[in-house]
Image (tube, rainbow, N blue to C red; front, side, top):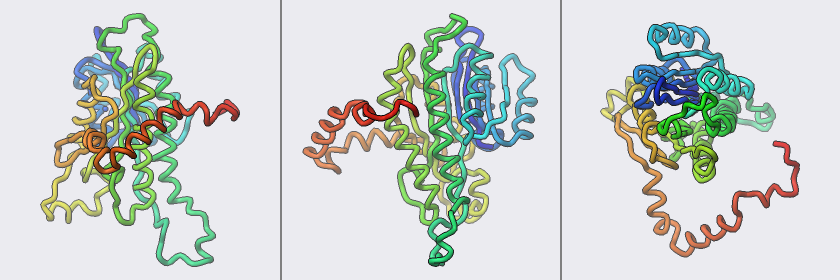
Length: 324
């Protein structure tokens, strides 16, 4: 299940989290999309910590089953049907958490779709290439359009003050976590559209990390998660040969723990957490620290000047319609 997590709230210092399919040390309420795999592990971790969790998925039966499983405690676990490619469904997920808890503190975009078909089939002819690759492009809808919708809605809900006026200092920590993949920073032969879509998630995180952190009245931390081989349905076809190779792999619980850790650490912003064998590293720090080496000191200075000159991109859109 690819879960959207949206809100977390507690009786005393409860947080509200918005997530597309993740943790907090305080009691919380969350919205998620997903009922299987990493998503369900995130829901369980957060709920065990006392969080109210609102989660969404396109798969109703496992989502409803997870809600029933977790309904016996004080902390809420609410499933909301959600197709990540539907803007209305993303809105409904966040609204469910906000209406019930009065605030949304953290959001996680976890939904994803593996390669569908062969976008660059070596057997393509001048005749077959005329057929639109709709199956392959469905990956872009789920892996790129979905997170863009989710992040836009999250940015509005996360910055809202607690409507109940009971927000604590802990609840002031807001975050958006976007799940990418190891394919987000390296190539995986044959996974043409999947790799491109996961690279897009890192681009989205990088362009948001400096913007959302300045949100008022609450700043919003933005981070990305890049798991390597994780034992989910997406890799069922190679799980046996992978195990025989001796290469490290992650369990869904491993990935969920890292995501929850990022939510709980109020200082992490703009990070890219690479997960391998249950361990994680913030690889974004190294990229930024060594940029003057692999780009060149002079090029780095010029790029920084150019970025400062462009500002927030307002000059690019000044003469265009304000309609999104």
